[in-house]
Length: 329
Length: 145
Image (cartoon, rainbow over all chains, first blue to last red; front, side):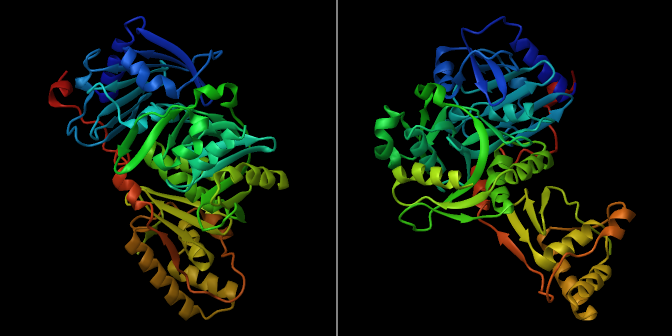
């Protein structure tokens, strides 16, 4: 039996059960999702990251299950310590062994997906962007692309904030959200590579503990700190922002960096700078179709003016500086 | 020696006269500008090293043997970095070959690439990136079904 046939068969078996104990609907980028959680614990783990709403259409039926709910051990590939990717006959599947293994699989024809947690737990960074690789798989052969960036929108349009970890994306995005801007995400957002439309994928944020004091009155209660490879983060839900979790039209791409400016400063950058800032984590974390994703990211990099943004030393000065820069365009 | 710019796990994007190459295998990014970008673009349309050297010399008013020697050295460097490979070149697109000409202004400047190593750390951190193209080997009990 081919691997894709077996995975398709097991997905169908999971969905043979009419429903899961906890169900919800959410929007995720351009897609409407029906979410099913096999337990309250799973819902508590993942649901806070989703933008719960009642989408007009369901593009993906997605279930979160553990080994206690369904034995999918037959899907674990040979040499289980190695990550695997399968794209075959309408099936997209990723096996992430790591310390806490996760299996994602989607039947793109049936529009059904699963996130299977053999140990009943998930790595903390996955809680802030659950099943994002399946969402990227659904974007295959569409102009949409999930990109590693933050995005916030003011009256002049949206700024896409592209850069590696520690570049200041989350600080800038939360400062803008706190100032009343629309918030589309601090880690991954969906971008239409043809029109420049930005949509949020999740309502989560990954905040470094050092920034808690800066945003305490905005974020409210913090979650426990997760630590992955020495990268401590509070995995936050910003669901309380309500309709300020939203999208809009890309107006500029800012590449945050800290070069010692006291107040925010902007320097023109090239399309290739935006490409280099957007592609690496996007490509590494969302495996599959690397050429297609690179082509989409290249188009996104060329949709709007690009600037390096030295975000300064006072986060609360960032929103007004961003607003002035966007208005100048 | 036939050369190809189609290298597994190497992504290329052209931005005007600049080329960005991303090596997904080791996380190294490269920027090619000026004559470096033009050499890579020439190889992409299957121009030979000699043809590229002559074309760049004509565009910059430089010395053909000297520039061809520089192109040779740069091509060797790209081979060592895995940015191009020896092997069957892509099918020659005669129209693309005929239309290709280096876009350069001013005097010849020796080609060099900018190398960005700062993304390698990401490769060590990320749990997914190794997911390869070798498929999804089922365990024996499943294969026999």
